[in-house]
Length: 184
Image (cartoon, rainbow, N blue to C red; front, side, top):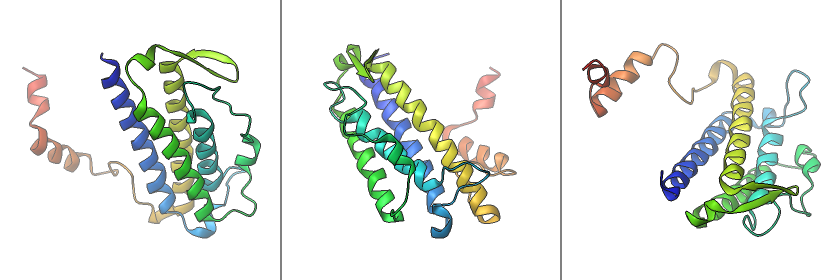
């Protein structure tokens, strides 16, 4: 596969995870945004702050400096004392902007390079995949926690239970009958 095509697909996936996290967080009341559950100290707020901080470190000067920046205080990403929902969202957006700016500047040739994270050398594609996996992991946590906090008012982010047939009909009208094509 062409490197630029792969990179474009990766960027699409990053954008999807950002949207899933935001759509989940938007459903959480302000009082619950900073709440944790089940003895886990992480809240939607801490997870969003951490992802923003991670992006700021990993993606700033991505090709030229180590991914763990000396000005990063990872432990502070898990403290929300004195934070507001707005300040958390600002850290989230700032981190994502740095990530997307860096990703969109990469060329196919850049994908052949090596970078370091905490001194560990790795290929650029490995580092990108590692970060995508990190984001997917925390997106799952955000969605799960938000769903628990919202309860019965939760609005699904994908196909609602009991709506699969309706969704499949919608997709068939858009893309044709893939099941018939499968059996040819």
